[in-house]
Image 1 (cartoon, each protein chain N blue to C red):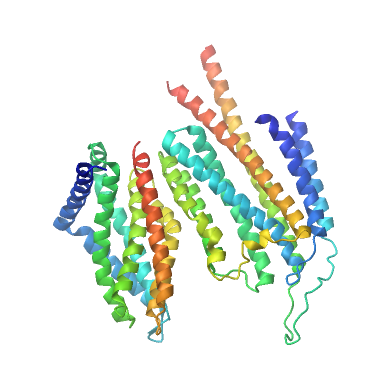
Image 2: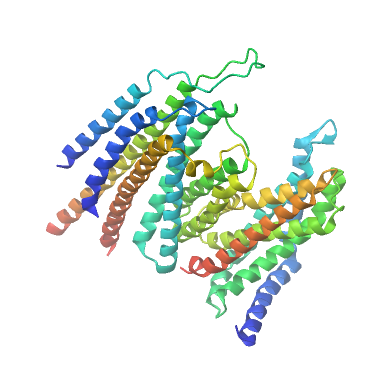
Length: 232
Length: 218
Length: 93
């Protein structure tokens, strides 16, 4: 790709992301509601998995990723609902931009949102479950990044596809969860082995590479199918 | 194509008629005994399921990128078959596992990933049924993502230590077991083709009905 | 012709089912399956019901699904004939 076209792709991505961020910054609706929902998730699961005041083993890793999955689904739905309400999605599709750039722009917005949520939920879980989530900060951050990327990559595509569909609210989780279960499994197992008393770094590395593999596959597939899926 | 239907039907019927005899005559496996004979239709059901997912994914991709309606009809038929054959595999597996492992279900890599694959195609059918207009394209995308899981499912038993038998078991079957297995596999794949043809016929008939309704509106 | 074909097919499938049931009859005691001496009082699961159930599941699913396809085709073709007839009737008028 020539430097000019590459510039234009990145510029387009930034335009789309910036638009979402500005809207979000003005109302802060999605970030507050998603954050609250994530915290509520953690609390509900905490009550479910705590026995005699102590959390069940490995509960922290599982609860972290469940909170990400559930609040992520909510955030994805809300982000695209915004586009549907004023039919701005059609306007976006009509502008002469690279479709993949639109996808990447939306994806970046969702990732930033989830990053904020995770930045708050992770210490919360570390506190409530006495989980040493900051013993290996780089590893945990990498796992969270790779896992969230995989989840959001599929989620952004599906949420965008479903904007005009009937029963879209219930269909998003139905479609998203089976596809992203391997990502969640890898995230949970990777995090869990790091939270053990003797952390198992080679196993964590294996799960991290699986996450990266899924990221590559999912993003490639998403970029490939975004345009035909979104055009009527 | 039509002309192949009846000969294939008769051949399949014959294979299915002979298969129980062949299975009965196959030697017992040393550690699992009689219950291992479920292998002869458990594994072929999953082969049929994988074929169905492959057909669904490829037909969906063709529909997504060319807009050909007949590709979409094949895709939705194959998805339904994937669910049916997957259900067969998911029911026969635990029946075998109950005796061989002592438990009905294990959350090991192969079982989990196979269940997830099946769920993807159940989700496909739900999307087609309740997604309204435009769900043909969405389901094609879903099928493609589902197919990305297939190598994962297949190789999971080789990559991780699981209770499920490895894929090399099939390659190293001795001839007395290999022959009935081959027969069962061929029978199931032939059955898959036949049932797919029948299901596609249903879709074609529905499309003809829709066309008639549409022409009414003109 | 189609009816005759379906009838033959049904007979063939019934024959297969009969052969299958007869083939399952007395299972020989499996050689090589030696229970460990240390296992005491643990009941060994009889394998035959599991195998028969698995077999039946396969047959039921295959037949059930084929029957479901048949029924749906019949219903759609009925609707198609009905609508075509109505159009022809309306056009004649």
